Length: 340
Image (cartoon, rainbow, N blue to C red; front, side, top):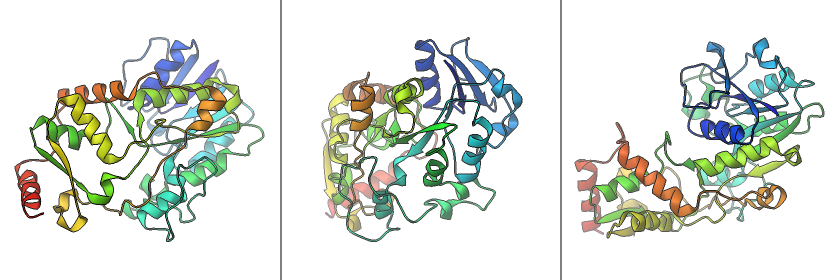
C-alpha cells in the first residue's frame, strides 16, 4: 500500500512511520524539513516551506504516484481540511485524520464553556459534541495564528460523509511518553527525583479521571486504521483501556520510581497558585476505546507499567529547560501543607 503522511516528524509521527514500515508499506512523508527524525531509508521525503500548519499547499509530487491512503497528522480546521479533501478526492481511496477528545460536550463542560451537569462516562464515539466552537481562540494572537482557526469538530465534518474519499476520524487523548513536548508527567517525576516527601493535588483532581495514551501504543492504533479497510467511514477513540484517577496515576509513578512520599489532597483555595488548575475537575474525561478494540482487534503492545518506566527514564535523561519547579515553588507548597 502507498501511504502519504502529512506532517509526521514530531513525537507521534515517527512511531507511526516506523509501524507502517514494519508492515511493509510504501511511505511518503510531506513536511517542511525542519525536523528529520531517524526513519527507515525507504521512506520518501517531500519538503516544502508551505507544509507548515495549516497545510494548504499540495505540490504535484504528492500524487506521483497517487497515494492509496492519506494520513493527516494535524488538520487544524475547516479550510485546510476542505483543501485536502478537494486535492485527494478521486485520487486516494481513503483519508485518515487526527482529531481530539476535545470535540466532546464533556470537554466544554470541563472548560466551563457549556453549562449543565457532567456528561455520563465513558464517552463513546456517539457521545454529544460541543456546541460552542473554537475552544482555544481566546489564546490566539490573531487571525494569522493557526490557533484562531483550530476546531476539530469542523475537521470531522469535512472528512465524514465523503463518497469519493472515505474518511476515518481518530480522536486522541493526551499522549505521553519519550519526546512528549508538553512533558505531561514531568511535574510528578521531577518532584520525586528531587526527593519531595509530599506531592499536592487539588481535592477534586485527586479522584479525577482523564484518559491518556502512551505514544507508541497510540501510533500503533493510528497505523492500524491506515492499513485496515474496515476503518473507512469510522470514528475511533484512542487511549488506554482503563483510566486511573490522577491520584492513582501519580502513585503508580511513585511505586516504579521507589518513591516513599505521599500524595496529599487540598482544597483549591489552600493550594499555592502554581498548582491550581484553570478548570474545576468535576467532569471526568474518560474515553471508551472499545470500538477500535472490538472492530479492528487493537491491543496495546506496551503495558501501562512499561509505558511509565520508559517515560520516567526519558524524563530523567532529558532535563527541562523551562517550567520545572524550584525552591520558590517548593517553599510555597511546604507552606500550604503546613497551614492545611
